[in-house]
Image (cartoon, rainbow, N blue to C red; front, side):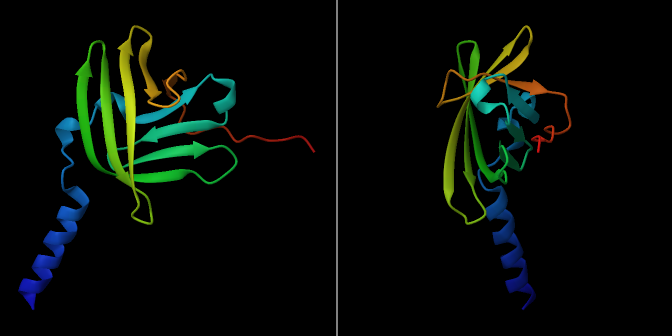
Amino acid sequence: MPVIGAILIACAFLTVHCGKTEDDFPEMLLGMWITEAERYQDRYIEFSREMIIFGTGAGAPNIYFIRNVDRKQNGPENEVTFVCTDTEDTEFVFLFHVEDGGDGPSLRLNNPREVVWNKTTEPEMPILVTPN
């Protein structure tokens, strides 16, 4: 019985950590990102080593668990691809373009590419209050 328990623990560890290496995770992404684009004013993207959270305004955030990270240098930017799963174990692939400019790093999703996200030092998104 102890052998079966050890095998189950090893399988669980490999399922969570398989393919994910600390070296591939770009440190500059850690934290919260916001944009000045009017359409996304109530949205945010937050990165930790384990997950990506997309703040969706008034709704509940979308949480994705990182399974694999691939990083490629493409001129002045890094292309970072995350393979993630949601709480139902559905797989998603997110491609981000990251530049480390003079005003700090900027982030663009592959789609829509024209929206620029900037890292913020704010600990969390402000609570939006609508007048009665």
